[in-house]
Image (cartoon, protein in one colour):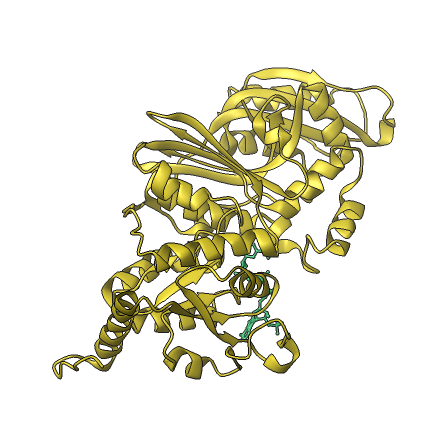
Length: 440
Ligand SMILES: NC(=O)c1ccc[n+]([C@@H]2O[C@H](COP(=O)([O-])OP(=O)(O)OC[C@H]3O[C@@H](n4cnc5c(N)ncnc54)[C@H](OP(=O)(O)O)[C@@H]3O)[C@@H](O)[C@H]2O)c1
C-alpha cells in the first residue's frame, strides 16, 4: 500500500497511486496490467499478440467494448475481465489503458481520465492525437504517466518511433508522404486503367474503404496524420483544420494517361515544409515523377520521406494499416513502457499554416471545342505572370468533350486559382479545370 498525502487532491492521489503501482510492478517484476478499450480490427489483433506471444512485462487484464457479449472469443484467457462499463475499467488496478475505439468522443474522455489518474495510455487514434495531442502530452507529464501513439501514423511502419529515436538529432526541413492506404489503393489501381467509381467499390468490398469514404478520399485522414508528423518532425503544432485537403474524387483515367505522357503518375501526397515563421502544408492528388519513390508505393502501402538538414532523405515504407501491422506498433509501444524506455522530448511551438508551395502545376480542362479557347486560357495565365511549360492534347477524344492539359512553371496555387477564375466567357468549359501540383 502507498501512503496518502492528505494535502493532495483526489486526482493527484490517484496519479500518485498509479505511479506507486508502476514502481511496485518494476520492484516486484510483476507485469504491467493492460486494459484494452475497443475490441475491433486493431484491438482484437493486439489481444491476439498479447495472448499468443506473451511479451515479457505485460499482462492483458481487461477488455472493454460496448455490447461486449458479442465480442467474446474463446482464445482470450479466462483471467481477462470482459466489460462494457468504462468507469469500472478505468477505476480498476490497471497500469496501461490501450485506446482502440477511435474518434474524439468518448475515446478522448477515457484517455484524459486515464492520464489524469496517472496511468499510461497507448493509442492508435490519429484524430485524437492530431487535434488534442499537445494537451494530452501535458496531462500525461503532469500525471506522471506516459502517452504513446506510434500506431497513429502509417500503422505498422515505425515512422513515429523512427522520428523520436533515429531522427531526433537532425533538423527535419520537409515531409512528403503517402499516408492513406485507401487513396493509394484507388489511385494505383486507376493507374492501371480503371475509373474511380468501380475501384472505390472494389476497395469497399475488400474492406480497405469505409461505406462512407469521405474521411479517406476527402483527405481528412491524411491531414490529421500530417499534422502529427509536423509536430514531431518540423516541431510546429498546427490546427489540422488549417490544412485544406483536395479530394481525389475528380481524378479520371484521362488524368493518368496525361500524367504518363509527362513522365509522371498520380498519388495522394501529404507534404509540409517550414517557410520562415510559417509553414506550408497540403494534402491532395499530386503528379509525382515515375522515378520518385512515391510512385513505387502501390496498393494500401504507405510511404514517408523526411528531408533532414544534416542527414538528407530518409524513406519509410510498408503496410500502413490493417489489424496485425497496426497492432505490432501498439504492442511495441507497450513493450517500450514495460521496459521503462524514455521518449525523447520533441517540443513544438504553435504555428500557422500560412505559407504556400511554389510548384509547377498540371491543369486539365474539359471543353466543348471551338476556336479561341487556348488563347483565352493563355491570356488569363499571362495576366497573372504565370509561364506556360507545355500544352498537351492527345488525339482521339470527341470534340464535344475534349480533355487537354496545360502545365505551368512554379507558381502559388492562390495566384493560379485567380488566373483560372478570370478566363473569359467560359461557356465552353464543361467542368471546373482540375489543378494538381507537380512534385519535382
Ligand atoms: N484499422 C486500421 O488499419 C488502423 C490503422 C491505424 C490506426 N487505426 C486506428 O485504430 C483505432 C481503432 O481502429 P479499428 O480499425 O480497430 O476500428 P474498429 O474495427 O471500428 O474497432 C473499434 C472498436 O471499438 C468499439 N467502440 C467504438 N466506439 C465505442 C464506444 N463508444 N463504446 C464502446 N466501444 C466502442 C467498437 O465496437 P462496435 O463493434 O460496437 O462498433 C469496435 O469494437 C482508430 O483510432 C483508428 O483510427 C486503425
